[in-house]
Image 1 (tube, helix red, strand yellow):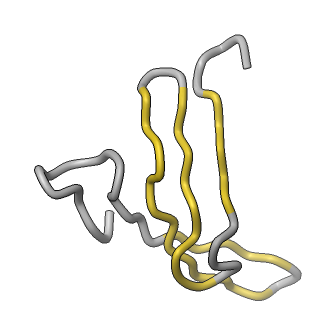
Image 2: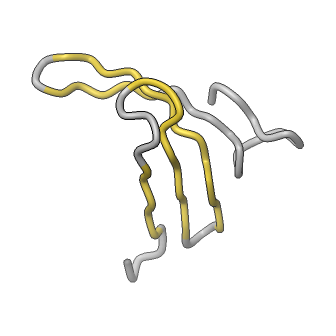
Length: 64
């Protein structure tokens, strides 16, 4: 975790530095948590590197 939420820990506003590999190239990016409703939802948007502004929304429950 690169940045915790204001009260601390993981949740809306937290940032995580990630790395991916695509076509042999390393891509570093930082997504920020936009919505977090455990255990069902995690919504993150890239704020640095990769494709800034790109959103990732995942349902975390087994029915999704």
